[in-house]
Structure formats: C-alpha cells, structure tokens
Image (tube, rainbow, N blue to C red; front, side, top):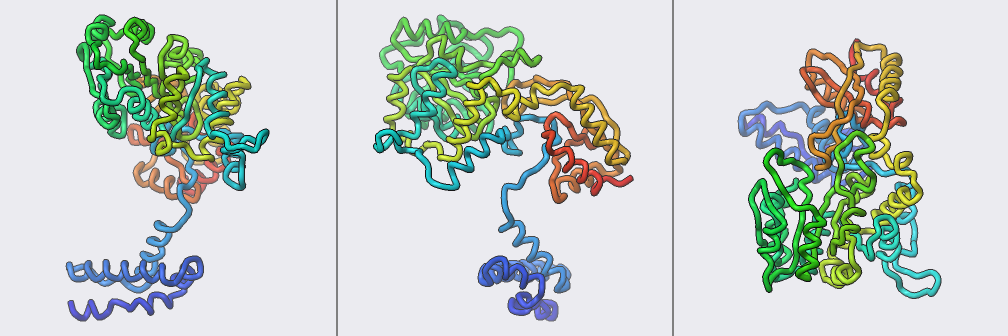
Length: 452
C-alpha cells in the first residue's frame, strides 16, 4: 500500500504533461494546479480504499475531463428529439430569431433601458412593455418580473399582506418545483383561507368566507393535472362578481401565458389572459416562457390601481427582469401584435406544424442516413405544465438497438447533443420538437452514432 501511495505522481509532474500544459494555456496555471491537486487527492483516497493506481495517462484524462466539466461553455445547444415541446429540463421555449437578436442588441452595448430619449430624463424599464401588454390583452397596466412564481408572490405581498386570501381547496396545489400555493401565501404574509372541498367548490363558498379581514380571492389554474368526474369550480366571472359585490380584488394565476386559442390547434382550451382581463380581475399572473414562447419571465397585468401598488412594493426591485430578457420578451410580444406568432415563435411553429411536413422531413433524413431506421407515428406533448394529457399527432424516427441506453447516451454526448426518448426498447426521435434548420445536424449525428 505504501509503495502504491509513493507511486502517485507529483503535481509538478502532472503539470508538465502535454495535455495538461494545453489546459494551462487555456486557463491559468494556478487554476489547473488546483484541479490536479484535487484529482490526486481523490486518487490517494481510492488507493487507500484498496483501488488500483491508475497510469499517468489515465490521470491526465481525468484532469482534462474535470476541467472540461468545470470550464467549458455552458449551457450548450441540444436537439430536442423527445417530443415534449416546452421541455423544462431543456430550457422550455426556444426564442424566435428576432427575439434572440433583440436580446443580443440589448446586451452588446448601451440602450435606452431606463432613459427617455425624447426628454433626456430617467425613464422606466416597465413603460414600453406595459403598453405592449395592454394593447394585446386589454389591461390597464402591467409589470414584468423574472418568473411567474415571483409574480404571484409579489402580487399577494402587495395586495393582501396580513389579510386573508380565499382559495378553493382544489386549487391549493403544488405546481412543479415545490411551488406550493399555501407556502407562497405564507411567504407573502397573506393568510390562507381554504373553501370548498377537493373536488367541488361553489360561488357561495367564497361569498360565505368573506369577512373584515379578507384581502383577496385567488384563483389558480391547475396547469399540470386534471380532476375529472364529480367536480365543480366557479368560473372566474363568478369570482369577480363575488369580489365586486364585496369590494375584494380577484387575483388570477393562469400559468402558461397562452395568448392564442389552443382549440384552433386540436387542443383543449387553455386560460387566456385577455379573457381574465375581460372578466374584470384585479390582477392576472402568467408566464412568458411557456405557451407565450418568450424568455423566462412573469407578467402581472390588470387594473392600474393594483399594478401601482405592485410597482411600489420593495419586492418589485428584488424580482426585476433583466435587460436581455426584457428585450426578448418585447420582441416576442410584438410577434403577436403583428399577427406572425405562428410563423415566428418556435413553440407555436411546433404546435401548428402539419404532420405531413414532419413525415416528409423524416423521409429525407432516413434517405440520407441509410441506416436501420424506420419512421413511425408518434404523440408529442406540450409540456412545461401546460395542457396536461393533451397530445399532438407527430412523426418520429425509430432506431432499434441492442442497447437503447447506450445509444441514447451516445446521442447525448455527441458533438451536437441529441436528446431522444426510449419507448418499448426503441430509441425515438420525434421530429415535431426538432427545429427544421437542425435536420442536417441531426442527420450528421445519426451517421456518426448509429451503426448499420
């Protein structure tokens, strides 16, 4: 054992190896030396535990892999072959090319982010985006923050701190990532008042719960699950009616930010912010990076008196959206204003794409790869907690392999990573979530990874 430990090379010896020298040229010698020492200490522990001493070439490869893992560019672009359109693990909605250019322009130099070019006076980063949102959904005012969880927390803190907020028991839920309505209410300093039962709540339940300490009524769209069967929940118009009768603001969290009618694309209707505003809610909360198809953001829209209170709350600065995301969101919203969302926003391009076009693309890829591929019907899902249970007919490339796990691993670790799914011991690449300009990259990756 002691002889094995003595055979562990010194830090200086490792630093003199050619592959490690290349790392030192890319990064500082001191940083690489830290990685070398860490690796050698790990090897020492392995040897003490009875492991075999690796040769110096293997040690260098471990150091190189560690440096790549730590310091290579990240995140890297991947091809989404899963068939899940809004894939949370893969960054949710991809941005339009115009939105990407806007984010780049806002980041690569100075901008009029908080300057009024007409007067030379200080402006607000919210003013332009607020007008755009108002034009789209009919709200009086709006504010954008860094995500929808922040939007809901900020809205509750500004409107109902130290007051009761009435929520249907069926909507006192967890919506992904540990985002639990009771905990959000607690963090906002509001007091949860549940009414109704898990499956049935009525307008009268809300009416009966209102008292002198009521600060608001909160309705939460159950975006990632469904309760079916013997169920009832009052409509948002019913809740607004109760709120108006008692001078209590109604807050509506609709989640996905769907500005287009999903029913036009063979999907169940999804709550739309323009409908909530038309119903008369005080505040409507929705995401910018789901069905809206923009960057990560949370939008609060509604009546000016309540938006003013949200703007004035100290948390508004803590949850402020950054300039690159704001620029990308502004351009994404302009796609809707210009009536070009289906042609420009990738999420809606995928949703609306005709299956015959997907099949034609799959046939072309198959003809170019010339491997043991088959083309099959598939089912794509929306994902991102939107439209649970809803699927779209799609087309996929199917690859049979002796080891599907090994093949999907090879695809993920290729030069241009492809994320596929395994179904019935087959590797499936769904073309609905592969962007058309990625077809040639997918073709090349299949040629490199799929054996004949």
